[in-house]
Structures are given as C-alpha cells and as structure tokens.
Length: 485
Image (cartoon, rainbow, N blue to C red; front, side, top):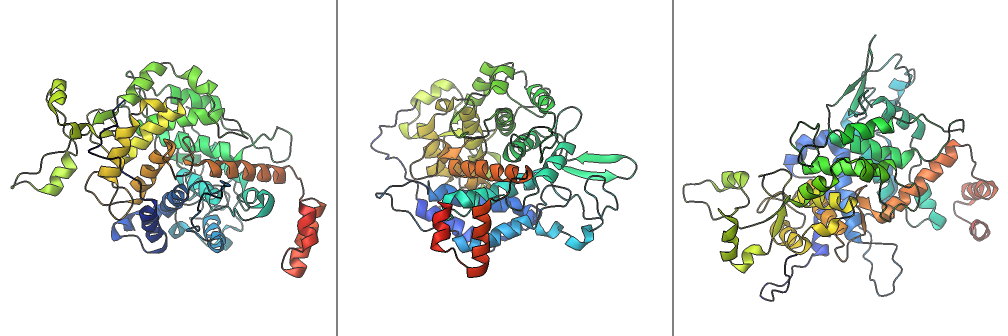
C-alpha cells in the first residue's frame, strides 16, 4: 500500500456542503444544454441526482446527539410529487418508461391486454430495463422517513404492479439466459426482445428480481413464475475471458463495468431477502467463476500510477490533447524510482487495458472487489487523492477526466466510490445495489409489504380504523397513534 505520511502534501478533504450545492442546482435548476440529448433517459438522470444527495446526507438514521444533521435537501413535501412522477411512467404491461416524452394517455390502454398484447397500442411496450430499476430505486430513495413504525418504508413501493413487472421481466430473457432491454409484440411472431447482448441488462434483471420477487411459493396468491436463474448464471459465467475479466462473451475484450455487473448479478441471485446488508459470500458466485484468481488479478490490475501529463505544445490543441491522453506512463518501470514523490500521490483506474483514467472506473473496480470481499486490494489512499484532487470540480461534482466539467453520471459514481470505501460523513453504501445501505433496508420492507398485499393479507382492524379516522378527522387522533404502537 502507498505511504500516506507525506506532511508536505496534506490529505484532501471532501467538501460535502459544496457538493450538496452542486446537486441542489442539478435538482432544482434546468440542466445544462448538453443534457438535451439525454431527455429520453430522464429517469436515469433522476437516479444519479437523488442517489448522490442521499449519499452526501449521510446515515440519517444515526441516533447521536453529537451528530449535527443537515436539513434534508429534498423536503418531505416534495417526496409525494416526485413519487407521483415516477409512478406515472409505469406501463400497463409491466416495467417503467424512461421519460415522460414516451408516455401515452392512459385511456389508450383500456382495451389492451398485457399478457397477449391484443389490440396493442403504438405506445405500449415502452418500458425498458434500466428505467425500471432506476424507478424502483428512486421510490425507495424517496421513502418518507418521518412516518412512524416504518410506515414510509413499507409504503415505498405502493402503486408498483409487482406481478405484471415480474412477468414482463421474465419475457425479456432469451433462450441462452441473457436479457434484452425492451419488448415488442410482432404480429404473428410473438414477443421480440430488443436491446442487444449486454452484461448490464443481466445485472439489472437480477436486481429487479431481488427487489420485487420475495419468497412467495407456488400456489400462493401473488406467485409469479420465476425467470431462469440457472440460465442467467450460465450465460454470465460463460462470458469470462481468457485473462479473468468479463465481457459480452468470452471472445470479446473484458471491461471493468461488465465485470462489476457480472459479479453483482451473480451475488444477487442468492442474496438473502432480509438482513441482507452485511457482506455474504455468494455460493453461486464463488463456486461458479472458473477463474476467480484471474478475475481478482484482472480487477486489481486496472489500477495504475497517475502522472501529470506535460503541458501541450504551443501548436497543440489543448482540448484534443485531453481527449487523447489524461495520464502518462514512464518508458520503463525503473523510471518510477526517479520520479518526484508528488508523482506517486495518485492512483487511477481504467476500464480496459491501456486505456485512460476515468472517475467511474474507481467505482466499477472498487465495488467489484468489494462484492468479492477483497476491497483491500484497491490502493485506496492514492485513489481517494486522485478523485478529490484531480476529478472533483471546484463547483462540486466530479468530472470524467482531469480538467473536464462535472456531470451527473461521474458525479454520482465518484461519490459512490468514496462511500463504498467508507469515506467519513457519507452514507454507508451497498456495493451490489448501488444505493445507501439505509435504502436497501427500505427496499426489504417495501417488498415485504407488496408480497403481503399479493398474498391477500389485509391491513388489519387497527389500520382500517386508523384510515377511517384519518378520513373523518384529517389527522391521527392520539388514541389511534397509541393503538398503532
């Protein structure tokens, strides 16, 4: 590990207030013009923004008089408005659409049958996998934490059509076990799975399944036939490459993002449904990967010493130079011995061999190693310095490469990398589901409530009386609050 005792260069500090100002701007003000091309994935942008705010707000359930809690950046009164916006993207055939621009009037679906696609509307089937995952995560991130007795957590998924979404998810799986992104019913030919072959879809499918399925047994109300988990595992495990990494297939170039998705997806297939936030060694993952030592070695090898590039020549365009290189390696490893001590302060990560540094790869590599139980292999002190001294922007947020503008994608995963490695002041973070640990606990309770509803379990007498009292009085009488406990 790198020596961090250099007193000439003190360790950088994460300015949480400055970063919160950046994310407040992203939440409340129009995003810069270059985001116009991302209008079709607005649900994704919302996830980056809200998730980042929750990371920066820290563990809000910590009960400590010495901890001065900031007021929430998203006030409780805005939760309902944002949740209504998310739920408005739910499609009648299951899943969520990625943008309001893709929604059709609800009356257009009145005669549409989700299972058969009979009388299909032109706008039907606009749900996709990423938007569905981000919608569910957002609903949990926006749970009302002020409700008593976990009422906010249990109601986080209220309005989600669990059964239809799980059926839609199952139809997205191909015979080889992989998943596509979207569905389209072709007349006379059945369902067409579109979106290409992408390890990210496999990860998203495993995440949605863990978040919604629960432990409903066949024959019980609310039971939905599962997708082929063994087929998914076979597809993922068969995509490991000769050098230990993961790609879209075993014959393609491995990529750190795909490695993360493969590892996280396998771990989610046998992740416990409750009390899941503690690390658990996945049997499917650790017994299935044929070259585990190669995988760990490949991930650890994504780190390299970041050396400042020389200034561009007078006749060289600085912007073009930044696009070509953002690091310089010595001609020979022995040359590092002659480098000044300041040159060894930073360790960056790339996603593929011989590629440049990028903020998000500290997350993809670090979180993948964390999911394997080996996050100590990330040389964290110089990696942290790289993020805070070279990638954090003066207005807040993180850029893709040194000197670039901040953006919500790299801003979110820059914070996620810091959080998963235990940065003080940030929320404890789940390296498999990519949300704070407190949000994972919300998901567990919200899923339980959906499953109970599917099994036909009613609210119970006390809850029914409470609802009647709220209707009549407009608030909770003291005796009803006491009855609820």
